[in-house]
Image (cartoon, rainbow, N blue to C red; front, side):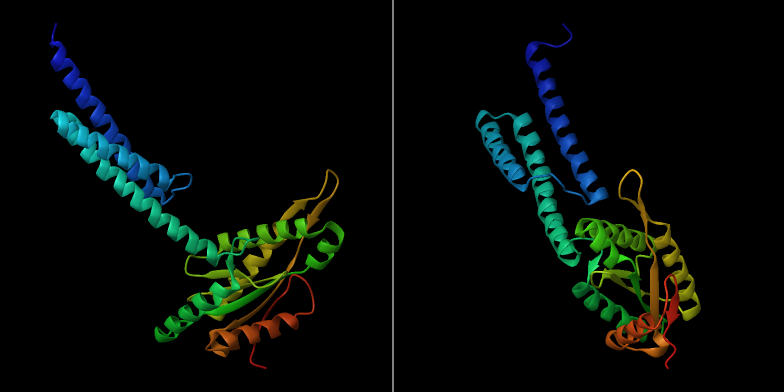
Length: 259
């Protein structure tokens, strides 16, 4: 034999310990990369950590360096994973509290806080910005004809398309049953109009299958106010709302002009 029995099982023990350590190391790297701990139980890792402590104690008792070293390293890996689960779970709860239940875009409460901070920062840095308000024109009719479930589907997809089309520095939130509000960062009026046109075009491209024969199309109307006519969120929102109310038609854009 190449190895005697004791040496063979020693190497098997080393291989088992190394495989366990490698498994947890890969898990840690995956969490760091994805920031996702969905379906990972903190209770399971806590119990597993206690098991590792017991195995470590047993290794000390029988003076097995394989058990001592492998379980000590694996315990630290497990502890790191447990801390990451607790951290990202807390982050997820904070993020969920910021989101609207139906559309998954930001809720208006968080929007007012975040947009106000961005406005203050933009004013300090002398950057342009704008507030936009998009109304989905057919919501009342959809609710009457097809019910709340279809309305929620329309709002969710509309919110999703708006959020995808905006930058990370921008914000979009659900304002009420038929309107979304947007903060557009570092954009002058000319640039804001380009974005506004693109957003409405993307809303118009959406379609919703009601049944085999019927497909629902929607349209939007957009009011906006640039930082030229407002220096705080309240004034900007009021001017944006006035612009939206005075549009007088679907698929149209109106910017507040100070009049």
